[in-house]
Length: 549
Image 1: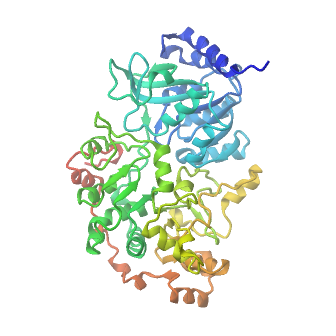
Image 2 (image 1 turned 135 degrees about the vertical axis):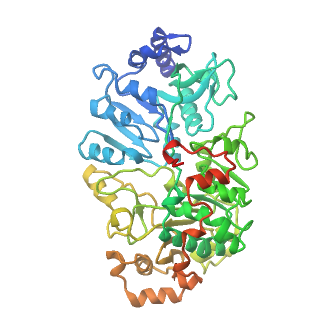
Image 3 (image 1 turned 60 degrees about the horizontal axis):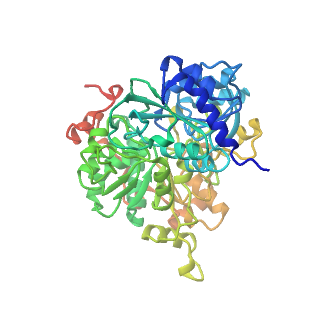
């Protein structure tokens, strides 16, 4: 006779083992290492938050201290590899295999450890892809999560940085796994119930807030005139003709420049109310001037941003907030919104090849790519029209026999300077992601955005509209045509590039009526972090490392 409750009995055994170190659900922090050794088994699948921003740092430190003779070869399934402890556990042998999405702060170290054989890589996922696998073949047996507070029953308040938590808990708890939460405090009543107590098995009172990375703060003082030029090109050459109202901006100074040009350059072009009204976006501080000027109608957030809490509380018409006034973010829902409800993704990358494939992998860094492959992909399941989506579809397939059956296209734009930090070229003949795949014997190279999804590339040289290319040769020359003085750019076919320019496949700044000399910092709606704070009426409270006053 088949046994249908092996997972349930396994969880019960783990619960009983953990209860030796707890009073009810509350675990003694002094016994946290021994507690983890009791509830875990070698080879377990473990999700450690590890989100894009918030980190279960107390639990991460404790996991790094467990006895490797007792707990080893864990399979870590976590979206963000952000803290040093996230990699310490691989060096010690506590963990062996890794499935993840993003590793920005640890990108150099994780590359060395992968090349050195200390990490067995499952795959680099987009967020939504990893979340989906939590419910299929990567269901955690133990989840170590972070929340702002808990009540005595174990109800959790996750606050503005809810992020991945509901998804992780849903998969783990209903998949018969164990959920352990670190919280900043125990309260009589939580401000709102984000995670109900019956999905939480143990709680650890860290007596301090969890660590949050201010990932989306960009100082306007660091924005260059070249980045301002690319922003002007994007606004006039893409936002205007396509009438993009629903969009996502990736992280970077180029997109920060766009946000700061909306109330100035965008206002001159008469675009308010016509573009950039609805967003899937973290609460970027550089969007404050546009919000205050009435450009933005609504923003749904993947996560929060340090210092923006009071500002969002005071703008409930713009942000999704709870009855307590605080932001309710949700990375899974916002990723879904970015995939299906947005007409444009625009973001930066480190490398672009001749087919338009892009990657953030270099010879010494494996940064992952978070949500960019999801944001930067054409959702073939989409069925609702919009003018931007339909126009892109017409450009991609102008000769459709039955226009009513022609798919629209999401605008997927890669924006950046031809040479990045350290004068490293953005355009390459061969992606470093292919070298990584060769070294690690991967079946699939970690490409961030596939070339067949990319519709436009914007650099200081102009805009390449890849939708208008008739074949692979034209596509290559369009890319070379905006690659400037990089080796890729210098190898262009000048005659073909000029022909593409005549067809408006390539548009230079002058073709759009933009004088590069007008790309001046005076166009920015804020010139410093302090200006952003003042624009918010003092509601934005920047992290101390960004304050110089």
